[in-house]
Length: 115
Image (cartoon, rainbow, N blue to C red):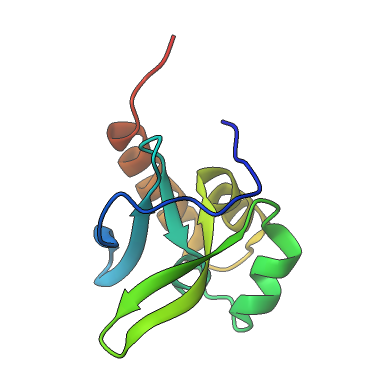
């Protein structure tokens, strides 16, 4: 999977494509159809106390994007699938294994298969 240095362009509104144990994961779909996830949502679900530090330490392809919220547009860090995997693999927190199994099944059913 190739990710450029430019932030992904939003093809539409940010969606709540995924919900894990009542926690929403805001997702942006780029022009290539690839999902980018709001990093804070992933890090929070995984139980990281310092979400920004975890993302900075483990997410190599992170980007900033304007995300619509109830209070208007806010700049947030978004991460691709590969960085979601990095956060999961480096987590020693109890819910990480449950989340890993869940997100793998969701991403595999969402992403197109290429041969």
